[in-house]
Amino acid sequence: MTEKLLTPLRTRPWPERWLTRALGAGAATAAYVACIPAGSVPTSAEAPGGGLVLAVILMSLAGYFGHRDDLAWPLLLVAVPPAMLMYVSFESEQPLEWAFATLVIAAGTLIAATVGRCFRPRREDPTDGLLCAHQ
Figure 1 (cartoon, helix red, strand yellow):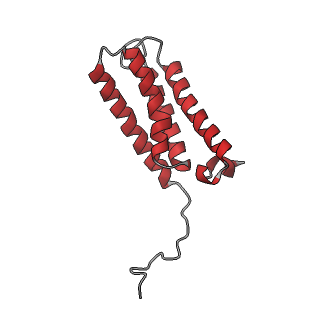
Figure 2 (cartoon, helix red, strand yellow; figure 1 turned 180 degrees about the vertical axis):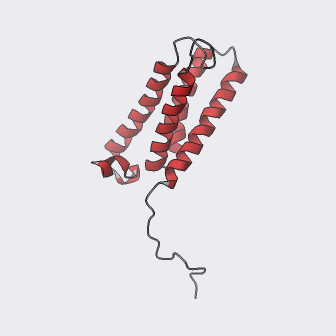
Figure 3 (tube, helix red, strand yellow; figure 1 turned 90 degrees about the vertical axis):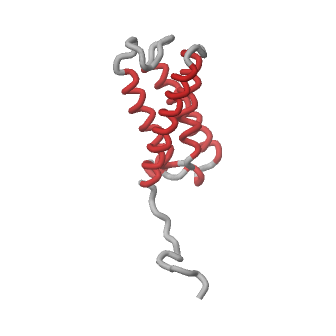
């Protein structure tokens, strides 16, 4: 069961692949809705500690999807749903704050996904150690 949860998604059948991705986007959306009160800005006093909990959840999701999938997918699955919900909650009145928060979330997602990729099992390469293949 563990190998099914940790194998690369490109090796899984397409329904399982897309269901896993949809669940990831849903989890990121649910984390934002649960951690940030409705109508408040994530940096406001109305959400004490909610931003930190949200960051931990999103970084965990990004690391997981970085481990299992290509590098662009964590950005789409983890960073985009909260950014869109933030855009709605900012009501387009604070475009610079929204852009900065989106940039921070996207950068954190890419860093966590890259760290997650470091823990992938290494594939054996028959040309490992060769300086030049033409001899």
